[in-house]
Image 1: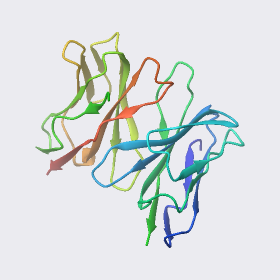
Image 2: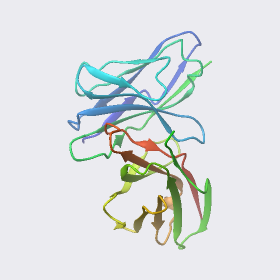
Image 3: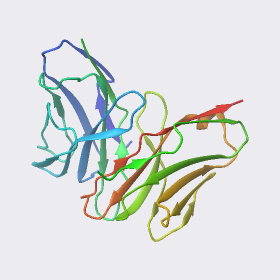
Length: 113
Length: 113
């Protein structure tokens, strides 16, 4: 099956620790995105990448880092500098050429205590 | 800044009724709009999209209407079913946004049996 996988579904960390969220797609999409969703809120863009080895900051990039070493993978690291890391994190991908539709993964719920 | 927003945060309907979810946008340069459905704890799923050169587009039980004059978008769901209960987001892409989508806060649709 083609799609986007995010792992794990639930993640728990202690404050002060860095944590990396996984996102993999086998859709052969060029672009990948990371969003953060807080309860009762819309999606806010953290980082996005349209090509391997290149990525841009979104609206709320502070305290996060990403890498795009392979087309299929776009891991997100939540660093200890992120003030309020507890949230639902969504990864998405898109073809980019002639289409704006983004395909979403199932999400990772991160809880930091 | 430019934003996409929703008139109603919650909507409750009876099973079998038609539902209308509204969305206002402020960026006159927006050329593409998309509706997503998000069930609790899951990633958003594509419902329907529309480009700015169209006023109406129909899918299976869903219709999207675009009124560029007043910058308004609506999603109509016919014969609403309990499985339609979810949060519905509109999102826009505007020329020059580099294939990014800007999401509204969402409307929670509850279908009563």
